[in-house]
Amino acid sequence: MKDVRNYSLLSHNTFGIDASCGRYVEAATAGEVVQFVKSYNAGSDELLVIGGGSNLLLTGDYAGTVFHSAIRGMNVVGEDADSVLLRVGSGEVWDDVVEYCVANGMYGAENLSAIPGEAGASAVQNIGAYGAEVKDIIYKVEAVEIATGNTVEIMAEDCDYSYRHSRFKSEWKNKFIITYVTYRLSKHYSPWLDYGNIRAELAAKGIDSPTAEQLRQVITGIRNAKLPDPKVEGNAGSFFMNPIVDRSHYESLVAQYPDMPHYDVDAGRVKIPAGWMIDRCGWKGKSVGRAGVHSRQALVLVNRGGAEGKDIIHLCNLVRADVKARFGIDIHPEVNFV
Image 1 (cartoon, helix red, strand yellow):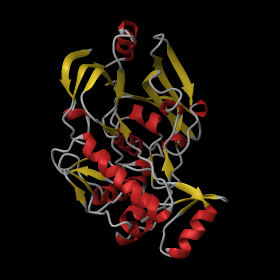
Image 2 (cartoon, rainbow, N blue to C red):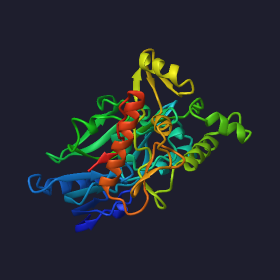
Image 3 (tube, rainbow, N blue to C red):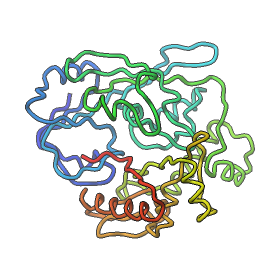
Image 4 (tube, rainbow, N blue to C red):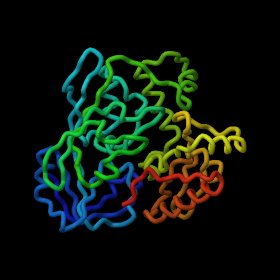
């Protein structure tokens, strides 16, 4: 187990914020997680559990303890005629999990290709893209309860999953350290192509019925074309969640903006792309000091170089205010502020 004092978090956040923590602990096994939790004195300092740092905005140095699970491993632990249960260590890179699934005939994760972060965080954030959400393939979550050191198994239906939400982000926040996530993947390939520009990109390549690998490559290409490389320009991917509004509100807006894109959630609710609204407010490509809005995807805020967390937050607030003033919609950050 790695245990370091006064540790730099620069390599642990994709925004490239140069902040440090009082103590950094990294566990490679579930046993080490239990060992840490049982020795941790909750009254001595605060605890922050992180994954790959791809959904994290550090607003300054963190005086407490930062904990990271580096548990690896992907193993089939059950199957039937239609599905496979794949148990994954929480420290596995998420896109490596998708790659493994596609290569081994386990389907359902293809549309989630190239999302940054780790497997443990997928169960916290309910990551999603291109019409898919990870909640649809999560079977159960294994975790260590911080208060007791007990190991627990939590079924997906008990996690209260919804759009970019789980109980791990609300009433269970700071109560568990996730060690493993088990996903239920299908043995039968049934691609979901009717979202965004997936079909258009496939058609441009002359592909009508893509294999899982072809679909993964196309989605990865779409994401890479729109999103900046954090190694070049610090960012956390999509900074804002796409708002879900009443259909009546959407209809009043589309009368003013006939080209407004949308996705039906149900009979009474509609999801509107936040990036489109930010773009229409004129923010795409603009900067305020050392923070900016990405030039190809307005949903992404970037560190132009040397930005601090407060710079990103200031820009975030300006963008939110403009969207609210123009469209009457509150957009909320997907990124966690610490």
